[in-house]
Image: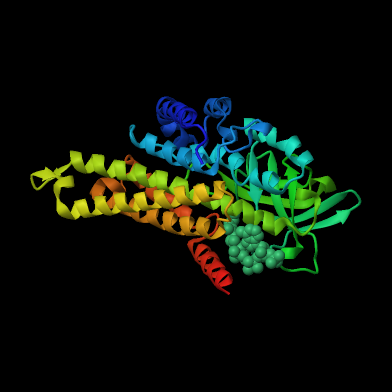
Length: 391
Ligand code: COS
């Protein structure tokens, strides 16, 4: 649902200018320092980027899913028209506050929890993070082992969370932990809001990743970490797994939009390069085998965009889009992988060199097929929902 096209256009224009004038000139620094420069972070906060999808009553811009998807795609697409070197890490720093870091509180939190934390998430005053994955629990999220034992008016958390995005810098964590030791499945899990400075919350060293430099992950270790009982999301035990799944339904749509944006960016990169470079006496873009790759990438990016916009609209209309979100994530994450592969291919030897953006994107997009549920988990969710609905 797009509420006011003119206002949305203004927002997209402002973001485009920011990308052109501030992000692109700082890309080399981002990669070199493996960190978003402090002044860029301050400007992102100033612009309201941390609260794009947070409701207006909590100080955000309150974008609908369709608006958010458009902005998410547009950012990448607009960058594409510029010099052509940027990193999804710029988005990652504020994306979590709009997405998996804040949505657990927004979707299932009590009014008190929302009032206490969400306004500060919307301004970027605090950074957030989502702790589900563990060393022995990834795709099988319901098997998590982190425990939360009630002790008076606190819960005591023990366990390790792994590959936690924004872990090194987050001020606020949504943590899924087992409150019922006798229930080894989803029903034994609760979600907690844990402040980053709570004694017993220990951050491991930053992970050394394949790509997405500037976006950091690490282990988060809970060692007798005492969390006020009032910080259990929604005030009820046993709801945490469902909260996590609802957060991921939304997150999967957002990631799909990002995949489409990156794919459009890569199509632009591929087109520009193949129109400039000549072989056999003509630009590469006029050779039919190259044209086939350009056309396939354009078509697939368009298909992904259409899917994401449809699912986002349905979500805004109140439909349960769990299956469709997984369809989008499955298709778009795989699609951008193919598009990135073709982008390297049409660049030839240049595509293997780090001064060309496609080399970096080739590594960056690999993550889309893994996080927020692997491709195989999306297949499982889709098929299970199909069977459930039919029976
Ligand atoms: N929304 C609301 N509730 C949901 C839900 C959703 N999207 N999906 C599942 N649930 C509920 C189920 O209805 C069920 O509730 P009841 O017990 O009341 O019936 C409960 O949650 C357990 O669901 P289910 O039995 O389907 O759980 P499983 O353990 O079989 O696993 C999968 C479900 C595999 C889909 C889940 O573990 C998953 O998504 N894994 C991937 C995790 C992931 O994405 N990790 C990435 C880390 S975050 S970057």
